[in-house]
Image (cartoon, rainbow, N blue to C red):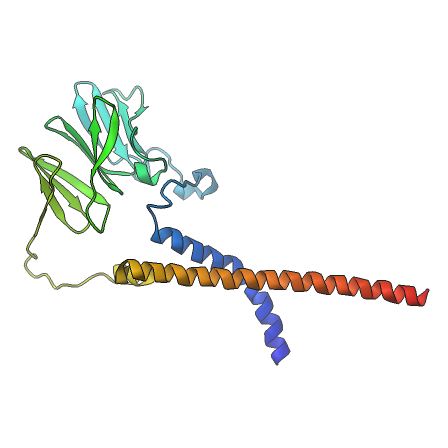
Amino acid sequence: MVKFFKKYHKWLSIILTVFIIAYALSGIVLNHRSFFSGTDVNRNYLPHDYRYSNWNLAAVKGTEKINNDSILIYGNIGIFLTDSSMSYFNSFNNGFQEGVDNHKIEKLIYKNNHLLSATLFGLFSFNFETNKWTKIFEPRGESRIVDIAAHGNKFLIMSRSHIYETYDLINFKRISLKPYVGYDNKIGLFKTLWVIHSGEIYGLPGILLVDFIALIFIFLTLTGLVYFIVQFITKTKKHKNDRLHNLKIFN
């Protein structure tokens, strides 16, 4: 019975090695999205459902007119300048860091001679003199900006958790909103499982703890694989030497 479990445990572990390492590494990447945001994967290596075709997959989310014949289109592909007839598309992403994630735009607004973009990593403002985007605001504890609105000379900036107002794009004040009528203080099951799985429920210490556990799994898996390979090579070499020794005795 012991030999049975030892034998099949070994081969089952070898088969699962690839999946364990893949899950552990992908979990670390998901926990540190901003750190890996500059690394891209060519969509040609992915299934067809994940490839851009005819502006699908939120490649374009909207447009913003900045003068009579200049229109900016924006979305998951970044920002591009075109005209009313869409006769050309020029990149308008100067100032953003490299990487697809850094070019994902949630909202673009042009108001009071200010061009603002909401990204996964903060609020950016475009300088028309230097033709460059510059980050001007990133909420504490979260970086994703999901929407921008303008009212008079005031801008409202919305993150995933809060709303901020600013008049000068320098000072940002967080607005406290009252719960809506009938609010039951509940959270979705998916979100609950996500923050537990990532360790986010306990903040940065929780995230680092989950990363550490993932590294332990990777270490144990790789060392087990190395042990198997070394043992296999050693046994093969010993078996070969034994055969040569027996041949010498026979001769």
